[in-house]
Image (cartoon, rainbow, N blue to C red):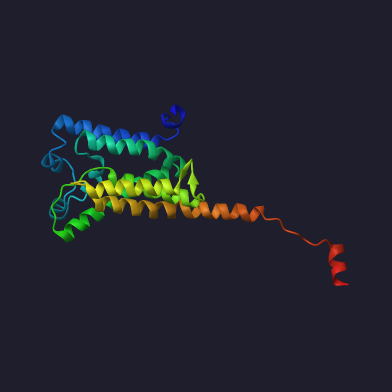
Length: 225
C-alpha cells in the first residue's frame, strides 16, 4: 500500500491538489473561522449575488479550494487522495488536472446558475464538485476498459456514486446541484479526452491481431481452372 498510495512521483497532481486544499484551509483558519459563512464569503466562497452584481467570477474557481471546517476538508481530501491517484494513473497527470479543474468549474457554474433561477443566496465552497468529476471520470475509465480497472468494477463505482449522492441529498447544506454538475462534466471530459482515444487504440490492436489469408500465385491459378 505504501508504494501504491504514498509515492508523489507517480501521482504528483493528486498530492499537489490535496496540499493546495490543506494549505488554503490552514491559512483561512489562521485568518478566522472557516465554519463562519460570512467569513468564507469575504474570502472567496461562491455566492450568486457577489458573482453577478460585483462581477467576481473568480469565486467559481476559488470556492473549489475552500472548506467549511475540518470535517468537510477531511472527508473530501480522503476521497481525493485515494480515488484521485487511481484516476491520475489511468488518464495521466495533464488530463487529470484538466478534468479535475474543469469539473470543479462546471459544478460551480451549474450551482450558480441554479441559485440564480431559484433566487437563492447560498454561500458555497468545497472541492466536492471536482471530486465528483473524478467519480464520473472513473466510471468512463472502467467502461472503456471492459467493466473493470485496477480491481474496481463498474458496479462498485456506481454504488459509490449513488451512495455519495444519497448522503448529499439527505444532508442539510449540501450543494447537490454542484455535485451533479461535477459528476456529469467529469464523465463528458473523460470520455472525450481519454475514452475515445482508448477505444480507438483498442480497436486498432484488435484489427492488427486479426489474421489475414492471401492466396499464393499457384493457389490463385488453381482456383481459376
